Structures are given as structure tokens and as C-alpha cells.
Image (cartoon, rainbow, N blue to C red; front, top):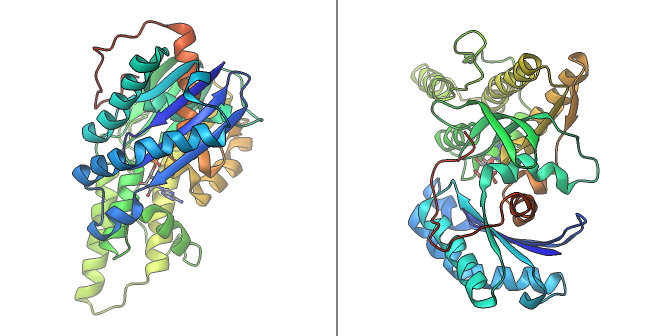
Length: 334
Ligand code: KG4
């Protein structure tokens, strides 16, 4: 059985072909970074227009690289939400049209399920249950994953997502979008203890996140340095900011695992490609007797393969699909 996965929730148009034995036949992606970089962030209208241009060639490329045609596809899986509504509409409408024309079954996938399950694209993957930390530009959430289709939300951000905080801090430091990878590169030569930025732990035992205060603290630091005519030491600011984000992400994920008495932790989402987050998780997990699984960076960021995988499992669980279904902007996994 072959599943075609289509992803268009934000600023990447992606498609992949996955065999039901887990063999990934193709995974292709068209990034819009160059379009949005001069605006310092994603412009939703430009994102949907770009998806419109890319969706057909990207799906054709995924089929071509897998050496299959549409007739060989048994299931079409497509991101239904959450995301930017215009971006979602392009991929989801295209998937519905393909399904209608070719009479191939279709399944709508929650983008968060894709990120939680992307670890199963790797040979070394965990058994259920596990705690999943999903950190991207649009979300920062902790889930208890009990099966391929059963996820319980344990905590989420009350304001900015971690990736959003990286991107906004990068913007105020004068770096182009997307700023996350640039901050982590700059941080390599900086001192993570140079500036004491705040860690927002919220109420005792809370698994929620809040990153907006940290972002303001970076802004205040920059303004104060400028008022004193001191130069901004960018590597130190980046390293200290990154350390504050990583501290909270790691601390709350381990807290969730201990609260739920779960011994396995999985990371997903674009921010989990951050080398410092991966390193601190790897250092801290053995101390807490936790086993850690992190996908390769290519499966941390948005991709079509994780949508194919999540869709394949969702379809086994619930095979009814109505063409009346529409996209949604908030995750259903709550
Ligand atoms: O999962 P993803 O590709 O798309 C969303 O669903 O948002 O994540 C993109 C986010 C961006 O905010 C980007 O800055 C961040 O992930 N990101 C990083 C790194 N690589 C990507 N943040 C910190 N460090 C990185 N190395």
C-alpha cells in the first residue's frame, strides 16, 4: 500500500510517498524562505500564492522520485490543520480534488500528529507510551502519546511558540527570517551565562510555556546597552537567550515524563533541530533514567513524509472521509 502525503500548513510545500512497511520512497520540499526573508516573517497571502505555484510540481516530483504514478497511490493524506488558513486550503483542496478525480481514499491529518509521529520515519524509534515535546514556529506543546492515534495535550504555550520567539528575537537583532538557525549558529561562539535572561516556569507543576517575557527581556537588554553606548555582543545575547529557552523546554518535558511516570521522550518540530536543545536533552535524560528519541533535522521541520505516516495510521483507525470537511486553524489534539 502506498500513501501520498501532502503538507502545506505554513511556508513549505512538501510531498512524499510512503510504503506501508515504513519504506519512504520519496520526500520533496519547496521552501519559501527566500520569499519571506525580506519581510522578516511569513506573509500569509504570499505563502498561499507560492503554495499554488508549487503544489502540482512538488506532488509530481514526489511521484516521479518514487517511480510511481497517481494510479499506484492507495491513500492520499493531507494536512487539514492547524496552520495558516490560506496555505492549508491550497494543499487540502488539491488533495480532495486528486482524491475525487482518481477515486483514491483521502484522509485529513492534524499537523501536530505528524510532528509527534515523525520519529517513526527513523529506524530507531520508541514504543508507546511516550512524552512528545513538539516545538515549532507555530506551537510549543507537550503530549502524552499512547498510540498512533491517541494523544493527550499536557501543556502548551500561553503566548509565543518557541520558534516564534527565536524568529522574533532574531528580527530585533537584525537577522533575516527564519532566525532560529541563525541564532543557534551565532550562539556557538557566545557565553550562555553572559546575560541572566528570565525563565518562565509559571505555576508550580505547570506544563505550559510562556516565551513573550523572555523576548521582551532581550529587547530591554539591547535598549539598555544602546543607551549606555555599549556594543551589543550578539553571540552572548544569542547563547544566553537560547539557554533560557532550552532550560525551560528540557525542564518541563522531564517534569511531564516524571508526572506521568513515562520513561521515553520524543522531540519533534523545527526547533528540535536546535543543536543545544538536542545536546541538553541528551545530557539530562540519562540522569532522569529517560530514553530519548529525536528525528534527524530533516524530519523535525515540516515535511510530507510525517503527514503520509500519520495519515496511514489515521486511515486504519477511521476510514470515512467526507468531501465536506474543511481546514481548521487550531489543533484538534487537545
Ligand atoms: O516545524 P517547522 O518547520 O514549521 C512550523 O510548523 O512552524 O519549524 C520552523 C521553526 C522556525 O520558527 C525556525 O526558526 C525554527 O523552527 N528553527 C529553529 C532551528 N531550526 C529551525 N529554531 C532554533 N534553532 C534551530 N536550529
